[in-house]
Image 1 (cartoon, helix red, strand yellow):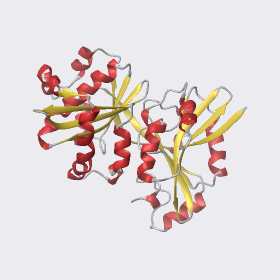
Image 2 (spheres, helix red, strand yellow):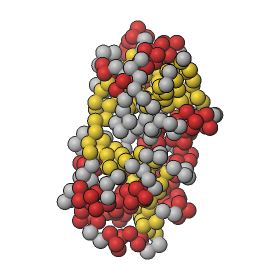
Image 3 (cartoon, helix red, strand yellow):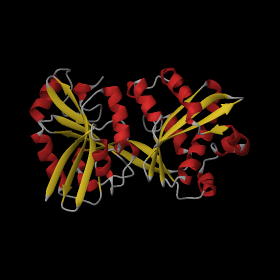
Image 4 (tube, helix red, strand yellow):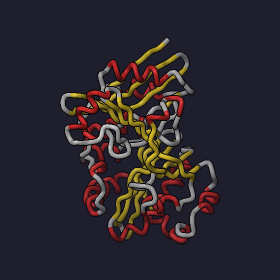
Length: 328
């Protein structure tokens, strides 16, 4: 028996019920997808299908161009996840997207929860890496895995830890008031240009941890982590110039708190591109490096080629931004 549903954002309880029994990340949750919707305003739903004993889900957003609709996964590491392998799923997915008359789809794959039975390898593109910390290790083991560049930044941990706070009532205003200026000062791409409503909603969530550092009663830096029952994601670090030196300490404080909450894995993410300074920074935490993949699927080749022609893009080139006609 096959049961297929598209669960709207207006049905948070149904969305949450569909995730029960499936290992998922923060990006799969209703909370994250609703937060992203507050910025994009785009139709968003949780695709869910039950095929016998297998259940597969994936958050999806729709956007249009030239009167046609394509799909993508909302910001974060989400993608197809399941309670068990299901090699039959790609066929059902093909029928679904054709029935919906989608042109193409960009599906981010969570590297921790990847199930290769849910997609065809020809659609998969490896374009970056992420760094994963195993929080089942002891703090001593995690510390020993740090590179020689990271360990000195925690040398005075006992003193620094006295300045650490998890009190959202203290940290929220700092995060909201400094986020956009901080991102602009680092020329971060428009991907991170979230509406204030998105940032406020995220920061107030129960499944978002905020760690901050106060110096002489003044907040100088904060880090945010989203988490599901087993997987944590390092979301943002925002600091004043004088607070930059505490980036590692805040991340370490997040590790300690998430581990105490029973979270098993922390995804530090990667850089903007492989081997950039952000990637190298995260690599020095000594975690496991995993390939970050996305699916670039074309469902209607004829229409896709027509839309690419609008911007003189090569419809057979998939290594860059996809779909090319939606490039900002």
